[in-house]
Length: 637
Ligand code: ZN
Ligand code: ZN
Image (cartoon, rainbow, N blue to C red; front, side, top):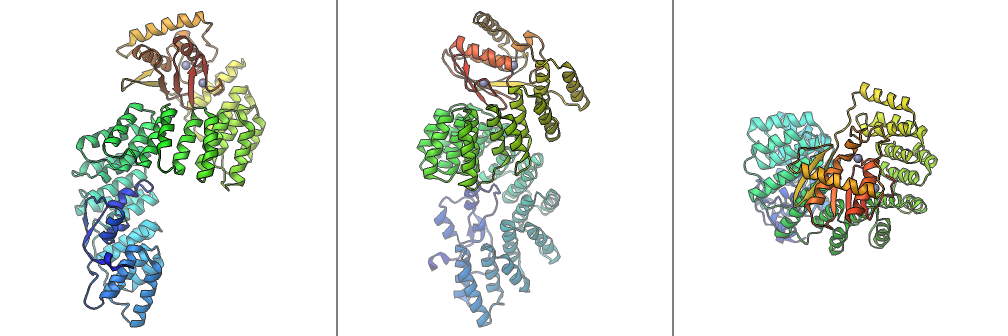
């Protein structure tokens, strides 16, 4: 082991936490906090804000210089065996009780996740300083059991010590891992009283703790109180929004961050790009693509993977493929992103072709198979789907999750194998979730199987009682088979349970601006020309053979027994706006928060033919690519 690394300085780096942020969003003091900076810099050359933690026992004390140095290098290299050997020698020499050496031994055991040994030795040390407590608390915070970190935190007070800005992030990390919001709030209270609230490290840990416990508002409150924000703190807040289903807020915070001039990190870009992908917001995604390029992340594989996922979700699979091909190292997540991208758009052949290539280069995981099975389902490839499902279980030893079952039920349902689909659900190894029952309900709708649909709705009303879409599907099925008493019963049930139909909203991006429309919306400044365009199209559609389908009692959300209303469904307004504000031939991408209704599906097919446009509608279930009068979903969704 080289002694070159063992020169003691008191500076430590926070860089590791930034880099490990992707896999572990907890942003705070990393193992490097107590490590030799030379080693850290060697591994991670871009140093950020230095932290100062004084090791009260510098490595070179006159009494035992060699052992202290050796132990310090064991810490840096996380070398357990040499550490144990030194421990044995120290016992033999009778100097293992030396406070300096014992502290370093605890440190070695702690970083090597040998926490029983660390704690045992810790208990034997009579004079324990703050550094020693922090070492052990950090060990538990990173490796668990997390309860032990919290318990030590409380014991510290009894011992007469006050937690500092190293202790606090560790113990907050333990609270995050346990989602222990009560304990976390207690620690926040101490932070407030002890004046650490404006500390950027403690603040980022608090933000992370609140985010993991789902308290985004509290997280933002802490964030707002910290005046000097570094990239790690910004990233914590961005992740708080992204992980709790607030992609819009994540995007707007990302813009705020850019305005402050704080340099984005890989984690910043990945979070913000993924948020754009979540809401299929191409202009933001493109903007961030540009930001990444300016900051030198153009060739960063993680950022590229996030970008390719974003382009795929925004309907640009070709761009996604180009980015994929440019990756220097194709990791499993990258393969998964592109395979899932193709599957989402119903391009089964491309997805399966890539899967075959992937098998030669990487080990598929459970996410890969979700993509593969989804591709089979979209492509109605029944035999292939069954074969891949068996391959997953047999060759890759992957236990099917609810997502895999959802894909299989969807596939069997599409291929008229409803009984087999139901059998599969009954024999599932995991509890069927709303995705599985939803897939069955959708299949029942396609094949008009009322009996199974009723059963699926019964399960769904327990699993997602507020989702009005499920009731609407069954109500429409009753209506189509003339069972009006069923329709009335469901309406009554929805009333009794206070279930409100969701408000339909569609949005379209034109010239880097997002325009949102509700059903029958007249609030847009271009409203007159939008309705004029719809009127014009309707005339042409009638000539081409279109008749509005008002047979359904209610479409997904939209109150619309009248033709007028069907014709002003939100996605049609968005399409009309896109048609009059883009050049002929431009592809349109519309996103809708609910399922597209049957009538709009027919109408958009006509519109794509009449206007010679490619129109992509991403509804709550899938992508519909309308081109030359047909849809990629094959009218089954
Ligand atoms: Zn509609
Ligand atoms: Zn379709």
